[in-house]
Amino acid sequence: MDIRDNYFVLFGLAIGFPLDNAALAGRYRELQRQYHPDRFAHHPEEQQKAVQWSAQLNTAFETLNSPVKRASYLLELAAHPISLNTSIADTDFLMSQLELREQMDEANSVEQLVGLRLEVEEWLQSLAREFVLDYNDEDWSEAQDTVRKMHFMANFLADIRQHEDKLEDEDYYDED
Image 1: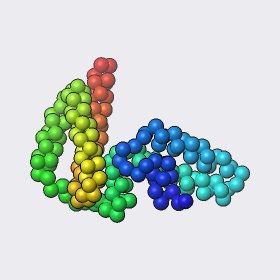
Image 2: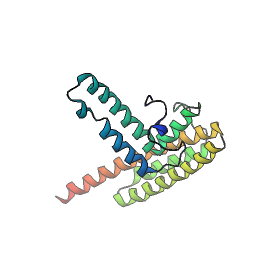
Image 3: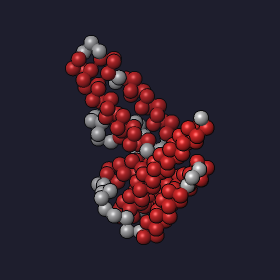
């Protein structure tokens, strides 16, 4: 089987958004041990294949381990891939994002950012639940839109974490 055929099958998981993370991690470790390039040190050709396979295995694991990437992958498997270049048409969502971004920009303490981060994490969980409904109903247009929002929120969450790190560094150096 080619690793790119289906990541869920590779890891012995049911195809769908809900995922047994412990089973995924366990199977990943098992496959990494089995195909680790060091096991083929005396066979350069086999070692090269193992390096490639290991890289693809890492990609498969990262895809399924991330809810946002997993949702995108499920749409790809269903022959309804998303384009992240397509704009989000939901003006209420976009206005909310502007307000959240202002809150982040105005935050001057880690505590303020922690509260904002928790709010965004909850929002992401809500979008994940919405995706499951859209996906199960085979409402591909809505599922694609929901995944775009998930990507948007995941990127915003990364921005918040980066801002938190910056404020923590500033606090650390101010203490010296």
